[in-house]
Length: 319
Image (cartoon, rainbow, N blue to C red; front, side):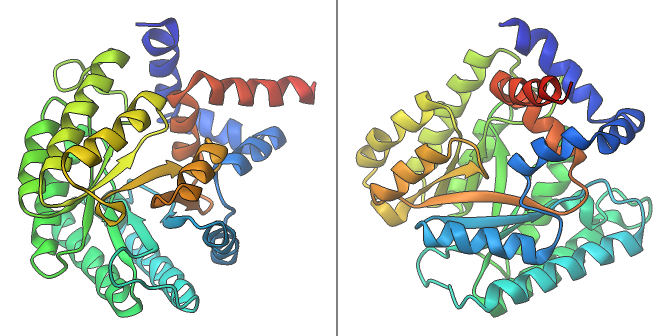
């Protein structure tokens, strides 16, 4: 395991939970420059502008209104209203597709009240249901994001309940968790849309693979399960090893262009996104926006040494 994975990544992820470091980062002018690389602005018009540019380039989108760990019912309701306004804006594009929908929103259940002390799961379910109903109305999809492993059972239970009414609802599974191959088998058998990612939280060895090579091996095993199933795999990775493995898996299991998609983050490996899209593949870009950007931003720094170096160069240029 490299020094970045062993030392750097856990230290950066610990910073994502520090209110003091968050306040410091938010006061640094240079932070805004780097955040703009990963976050498509703070307002719905900002997000819609980015959506338009990505769609013009032939890519699909999923839009995430940033925020997590909501501590009040009122904050959760504000998140719901933001998503409803966003979906109204997406509807005006008239961009629905009956097979694979180019427009989607991504939700974190913790932003919808999941961890509230009284009836948190019920509140999150009801809020997610409201957003799903609006998405159905405007012809968009919804995918429920994954968070740290302590929320996985609750999140998947809510997803199962929602899928009884919204069978197109997707969810995220994280390949670094030991449990994920079994979860892939369950959801692939039920025909679900699954976004498979490596995982972005600092999880203990008791529940997650810690070595980068072990995570990649787990990802490829899980992807094979999804490709063999009856659902819709969403290959969320920037790793060339994984991307290069996809065409052979798609051929092996008879999946055409509409049978899976690639997913990448906004402004990360943009040239590769364009290459895949120009080759006729479905490529969906994860577009985050909003002023609650700190946790997302720090997790992006922790994912790749290149992202951290970009930030450090920006700091050096400021001096």
